[in-house]
Length: 180
Image (cartoon, rainbow, N blue to C red):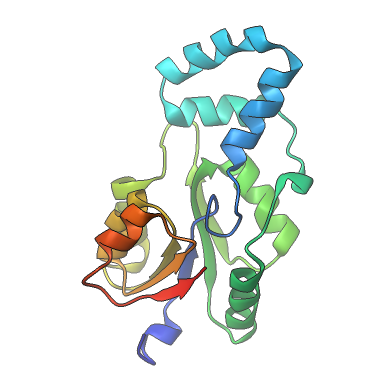
């Protein structure tokens, strides 16, 4: 990335990127562990959409920061960028209830963008949102999955963190920074 890119805000995905696990999957496991027949509630919520399902899980399952398995090298990188005055934003498809708690725990984010019970902030929706806020090419994006390809296409810099094979393949013609 060029020196100009170094001044752009860094927008960071949560699940699989900042953390190695998935907050929604973890909360779903806790929810179902309490009573397996709750699966019927989950199916009803899912009928109303992924954003609604994530919101209901976030309302039903108390967030526990011990669930979080951070990508330590990447987190250290973000902390160094934040200390250098680069704005850092959490941009996640996880529900904003959980995203706010992660942001509070770390204290490095200048803001968060997350799913809100109505909008599932992933792929094209996330890309469009970040472009509205920062302009196309006006931000650096850190992600890990094929869903992030839509965001990387609109970003001004790409960071791949423990990327899936599909994400790596989709980035074959683009420059990026890689964290394993």
